[in-house]
Amino acid sequence: MAVSGRKVSDFRGSVSKSSAEDFDHSCEPCLAIGQYVEAHGFCVDYQEYLCNTCFAYHQRTKASKHHQLLDKGNIDKHTIHSKSSTVCTEKCPIHKNELIKFFCTNHEFLGCTDCITLNHRTCKIDFIPDKCVGIGDSNEYRETMRELDRKMKDMDTLIKKAALQGGGFLL
Image (cartoon, rainbow, N blue to C red; front, side):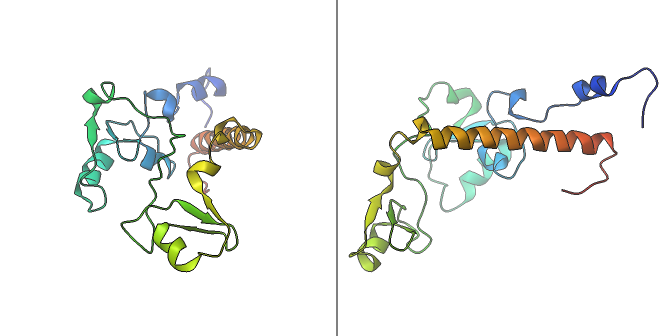
C-alpha cells in the first residue's frame, strides 16, 4: 500500500538489511539455512562463529561438547585461522570418529582413512588438503563466489519485494 509523500526507495532504505553487514560476524550454522544472526561465540575446532543458541547447543551435543569454545569477549584474543585451512573437519558417516580426508576419483567417493583402506585400495585416491591448495586463488572459485554473491543479492531483492507486497508470496 502506497503512503502519500513517501517514495518506495525511502521505504527500502528504512527496512533492516537483515544481513551480515549489520554486525561483525554472522552465526555460520544459521547462515547455512539463510538466517542472519549475530555471532556471540566461536568454535576453535570447527573455526566457526556461533550465535547464542548454536553456542549453547554446541556444548550439549556429543560430537562437539569437548570443543574449545570462545565467548564474544575472548574471540579477539584468539587467532582465528583462515577458512582455507588444510585441516579436515568433516566426520565420516560410516566411521563416526574418523575425518574425511580422501576422495576416490574412480567412484567419486569421499572417505576417511578406514573407508579408503578397506574399500578403495586399488583406486586413484586424492588427499583433499593437497588438492585444495591454492583453490581460493583459482578463477573457478572467484567466479563461484561472484555467482553466490549475485544470488544472495537476488534473494535480498525478492525478500524486499515480498515485504512491499505484504509478504503474501512463497519462495
